[in-house]
Amino acid sequence: MHTDIYGYLQKGKEMAEKKVEKESLTTEALQSKLENLKKEQMNQRFQHAAGQMPKTHVMRQTRREIARVKTQLNATKK
Image 1 (cartoon, rainbow, N blue to C red):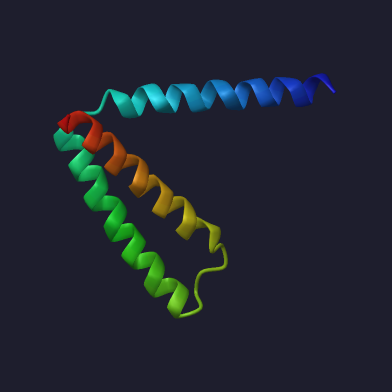
Image 2 (image 1 turned 180 degrees about the horizontal axis):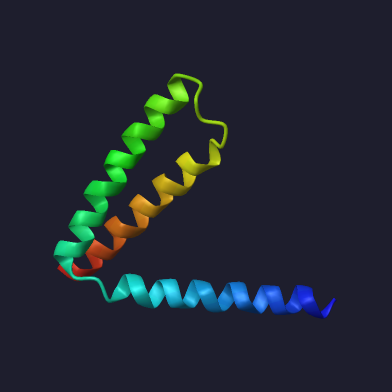
């Protein structure tokens, strides 16, 4: 049981570190990341349509990451 709690706490720590990492990106870096994510999303759509994508949950993760980057960009504009 202790390993489950440790794993849960470790996951929270990793998520907090990722949030700090994203907040420290410049506007140019965020724009570049957004462009790369959109290209990745397009490639994933092609793979999915061709039936070559066994892990379709990756599409959802990419879509949500794009939304996170867009949110961060809009927050820096204000």
